[in-house]
Image (cartoon, rainbow, N blue to C red):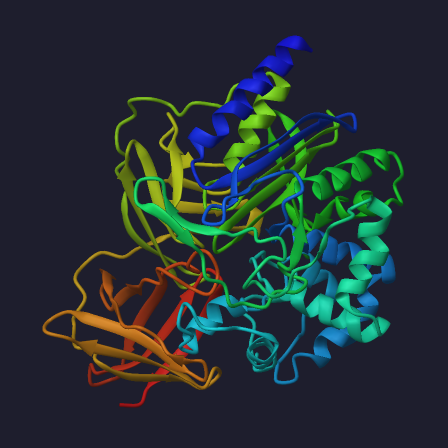
Length: 518
């Protein structure tokens, strides 16, 4: 135990330098007992408020498991809420997702954080109940059949919290307090829906140690998707509650962490607001959270009865920090990538046929950088010519390059996208489903694109050519802490060769068709 504590002490001491920023806090528990409870730096650097285990913190998407917990507590069979989901999607054509699809991020809905950008939302614009309701209610189509795939969708959990309020006649904040916070001993936890300020002055920060930090500006109203406010001590109480009920199959966390599957029976690595994965040969479950200025991560390893909680009021990688602490307490070493492997011959530009998204692979610092999903992924080269992580793999085969995304229940052969793209694409393109527009402008020989809709006039961004009539439009800032991913613009021409329409999408919002109107 002394050796384990020494490793853990060293890992904790390294966090402020390995993940630099204004402040943070971390806790490690084993067998329900606290091995470490530590905070450092500043909850508010300007006001010199220290970061302590009692500092209130935006838990961001860690909220989702609590929302699902309330669903299971109030409605043991969530399918009784399926009609409520359908009623909140009045314009949806075809099959509607059920409540369980929402809980498991298998709904097929396009994320409203991404769709808001297509409606022209400036990065710093407010986004509250009215805007959320309008975006959600306008949904006409899904980008995959419910239950068949996984895609991260914040409003899945906003819908669930709204339905809970309507069904029970009680506020979401009251339900959290009476049904979860009080039983778990989370004394200071609360619903912090308004992201503009925390009651104790804790601030979230953007920036880097090299370039400096500034207070992050948040104007989004989050509820069941990312509204939880809690301290490190509150999260310690949650972890102790989890461990104390671990042997009861009917306990709330036992039900939240139970196995789930896709509609074809394949095991799903995400369900009820919790990710399920394997690290150091052990199964674990948990979730991360991120809003502009805030990063959090919590995980639980049932076989070891180990819990880790990491909170940063800046944008460092809380997941990586949690794994560093987990390695220390388990006496494991983080795996090092294979060294000195040659660059694979399959690097380049592709299209993924099911999603209609571009997939671009290049080599950066000895690892393959894949730009396809929510953000660029760094994949480790393997001796067999593949490159991957636990979530994504690029796999060369006799018939081409395959992209495997097991978390999404998807595997497909990528289509090479080589050649130059013509630049005669200027014009206005309108999406009938969204009632929004894309404008493409040739500005002095360079193509720029920008979105507009009921939320405003989005900024123009330089388009990046991918292949013949395929471009990407970057979204470097959005309503949340990171962009939804590059937008793929696949133009199609009419019989005269004139650009007539464009299919647009990103990982969070795919298969939207825009027709040229000017």
